[in-house]
Length: 400
Image (tube, rainbow, N blue to C red; front, side, top):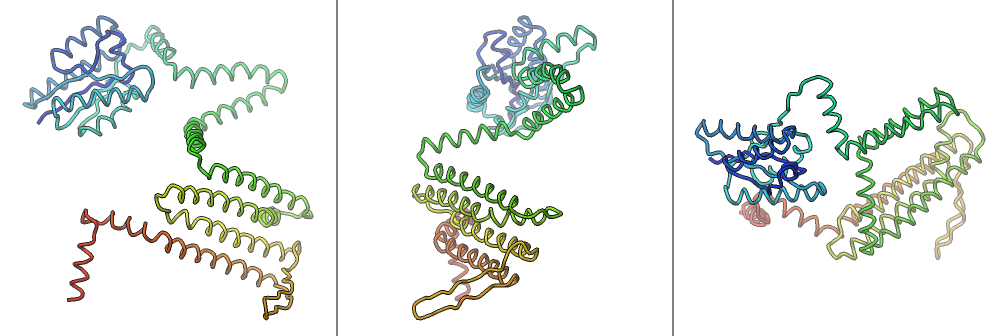
């Protein structure tokens, strides 16, 4: 059994200090490397992590295992380039030594992000993070602050917001008072922490990339999304107008119902427009239409009918909306005289219509997307093949 004891260096501190190219593998080579790193920069934490890798290798060899020690590093250019560089070096080590397992040694949380890359190539038995014991005095604090200020990412995420808050607080305190200044600064800091903690910056970056790809690929959904956004704004405006035209009432139920009643038709059209554009993209790609995209327009319309029906019920019960009057209808030889739907009848009509639309969507999606569903079931068959033989065997057994 061969164990690879690998020391990870994501930002290439070893190469920047000594100029040595990685990967470096083998007991003698790594011993020479740690000497070069220690002589070049005795304060570098990489010295301790490489020594820890050597110690683990020695202990494994004392227990009779075949252990190979190695040091791999990335590049300081970007995280993507660094990760791909480490992946290439690991491939070289795996191809040369063919290890059965690996033990990873790191000296920071940044280096630990490379562990999934190692796990994708060889099973990882243990992750050893080296923490250097420092003297707790003013000098060690100074060096810690110096290392902190040298990290560009930490400076941008910590010092820039803190410096901005310290500059803005005196101005707000002079013009608006200390209480308003403190509340404003606390609110901004809280929003920033939520922005970073919830990963909103990553979501926005991903959305920008998706929008750019959609524009370059000429997708129909780009136009329909813009139209859907305009219809959504019109719906919100119509709902706000409905609330402003309604007489003042206590509570929030009736204003909310009025907003829903006036805004739902526009919001439903927005959902139908967006889903239609997405459906057209699926059709133009010729990769088959997924059932979810076929069913989405019908679900949006069904929900809109049900919401409008219930909002109309509450408004009519409150006396702010009149009953639904059906005019005279002439359908060939069939003539329908005008009639009025009362409160419960209108609600029942909307609910039944929504259920019917939903059922039609389910049946249509199952009919048009049935072939794709069968293919998915065949690919997911537990026998590892297409599942045809198993079903044929069951059918023969039942026939017999």
